[in-house]
Image 1: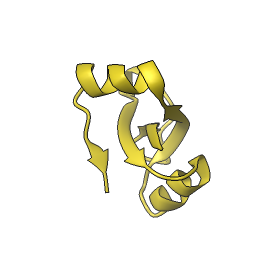
Image 2: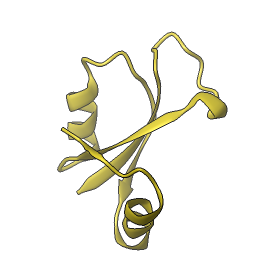
Image 3: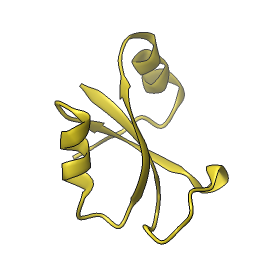
Length: 68
């Protein structure tokens, strides 16, 4: 499954929509995504599972690149 992660660069930052970044990650569950990113300094706001038309849209209309 592919997930889109919305995050801030620093855990000290207050979430502000204009400063939110995103990345794409392949994992079996949201929990696995969070475990893979736990050593990063990110303040994770939301993890969204992408499938169907949503996944197709992201792959075609954004700089879609899976994180390792």
